[in-house]
Length: 211
Length: 211
DNA sequence: TTTTTTATGTGATTTAATTCACTTTAATAA
DNA sequence: TTATTAAAGTGAATTAAATCACATAAAAAA
Image 1: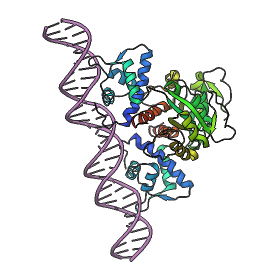
Image 2: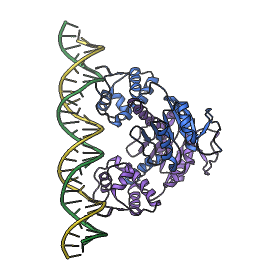
Image 3: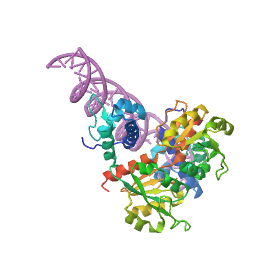
Image 4: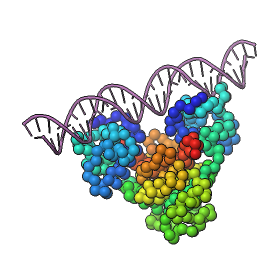
């Protein structure tokens, strides 16, 4: 099948499917139907089949999906059949917690550089061995370390400037934890993680469905 | 106007609008048109007007929106015209970083309790003065502290069990940082924050738009 | 073999969300 | 006072996403 326009939501669901599939694989399950996987992921079975159909045929009719194969296929679709080098910009509370957080490594993301602007931090080593560089050296270090993705964990006020520097350095993927809407050119893809927005959504629901 | 079914996406955009409006207010702007606000938020102007129209009429035709008023109105819509007490469950790297993170307070969310399961941590005080309680005391402490929202920052394996305890304790809003799909009854609203999913999405984009 | 069962893959349908394009209203200028 | 301009509000149209429902294919049973 060709590539029509694929809903962004479908891409995100593929990640959800992988997580469920990996859990099933650990439990020793070999094959699963769209129906059972759907239940586990909290979605409609047809949704799963359609999401996968954007990229090809991965199941066996009358049987289901071979879990091992499907994991491999989805990883290939998402570009997870390799490692990605990440730079952390902003080594404060959040930045350093994220670096120590095991979940990135587990999925093939490697913190390969860290930056800050605080003179007291520059040159120090993080628990994982990374040296903290000054943001002014971003372009140089990004190239040396072959960084693919930048994670912004600075205050909101610095976010746009950091994003600009990342783009100049040739980084086209940005994960932004700063509560700021950053502007980037077409070539660059930004994902925002703003937990206060999520909290607002919870507050709304609690307020409306009589707390 | 009545309350038809309101797209979840619209609610999330209201948070975005607030952030932009607060920035504008700081800069001394008094009034803004949907067109200019839209540009700043990266959305369509009609979208903003429709999102607001779900809840009433807040602008002045021919003029625009009075920023101060609109902020107040949106906060009221979202239930942000009050404070919300939050409990952190799991005081590891991420949990403690989030507690120290200033963004929650800024938006009216107050960490009012913290829990962990590690005996070495129980009874210790966090920098903000909170004592770490054992998870077994969750129900009791949640009620004492009038907790409205639980933030799960435990390993994935513990997430469902913690969610169950929160619900038993009467907490109907959960912000889940654990990479696990948690099941809850109708009455409870869960928002997931999974940055590896966001990274996967970035990886997909970098892979497809020839990096 | 042939029939039955099971579950994928997919065109058609439905539902939801977004955007358009026009109407209404307020303010300003003539 | 009247015409003009600007921008909100909104029904209609469009676009996008999700779901249904059935045709298809593989495996198992008869």
